Length: 557
Image (cartoon, rainbow, N blue to C red; front, side):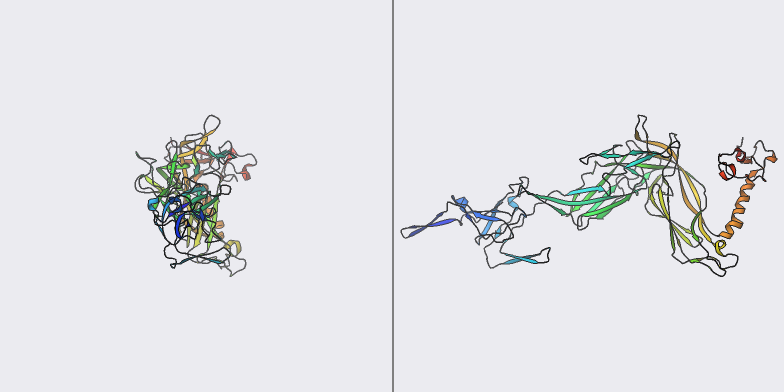
């Protein structure tokens, strides 16, 4: 409701009285309605009747559906004496800041236009206008994409005695949608990627029609969001020393910036980083939205907490040789003088995953959550997890890129940097000429502190910290072998190397006085079981292990 006054000089609702030839103008007793200026805008305007104040005041009631008004009023200058919203007393306008309305020149006509959804152009002409903006505090909705709550829905607790594992629910929701987190906070898994949806808007409710209130959401278009995520990859954490487990620079954490689109929407994807190894193991998330130059805080700032399940290395690591890994196979076609090739920039992608990690009650466990070299040293005694892929340039004209897609999954893409071809020689026809492209690997071992979910001794589960040995793998020297070479040279050579390490029982070795480990087979070299694994069913039958083929390791006394 808007009230206008033209000042003491104008009374806008009077009647003329004839006093025997003399005329006087007196205040009308009844209010007078002004004609509507538009059929589309359902506003009303009237001037009061009775006393002097009433006949000098025009009261305009806005359209209950849109909050707009259009009225035909006398052409004078007006002062806005008040603006009220009877249906919402919380909306208050400062009268001192409201401009006046100059409608004194009927010839100064302005025109506005709008295009409807049907493509029609509607125009409206007017002499003067009043535009008042009421801004509410913006709302920022942050949710996890595709989930009713934040973090993982379940955790699979697996032990050596129960390889199938037990599903542990990490949150529940009731009929009202209220979320209860089993561990006291959302749980995220290190190296796993998550996507949050961000929606920023201002919500206005027009309650002029109490029976049919109108809600309007105005998106915060192009608003910049600055995100400081303590549990995301990219944060530098101390691995040792007095500040072990703390951020290297608490006041200068890594941030991400993104911009809301025209609908006020954006998606934030991140990889979970290092855990907090100090009870209660929680980390925070902070978001700041720039709204027309004003810094607005997300409601979760200071209160949103998350737990990361994963490992923080301690820096005591060692490397040992691992198995060769075949990355690409180039099949040779049948027929002499024929060959096949991978052209330059040909790519082959392989995905690797495993079902879970074994968790035991031992103080030291062997886990593989960090996988490849996910943790990179930064300075002295600190490290960071980066989302960039690991790259290795092989000497066999191929480039390998590793992307860690999850704590239990990764993909390897091998791309040829030059043309790679099979041989067209007669000795290398068909399968004999198949080419295997791959790389040797190194197995990484390191001490780490693991934050994980384990039985709490009360029939339930809780978050605990344990010391573990973490394992991973990195690429080594590349190779490019034909199948003919693998079958007739490589495998026989490897078998010879293996056999050279095994002593025949006829040598009568019963003790070890050297500085090296000595291996003694329990079967002779002419036995077909010589050098086989203890659990090899092909040589041991259906009930391995077969003790006759086991190796005796004599430790140095």
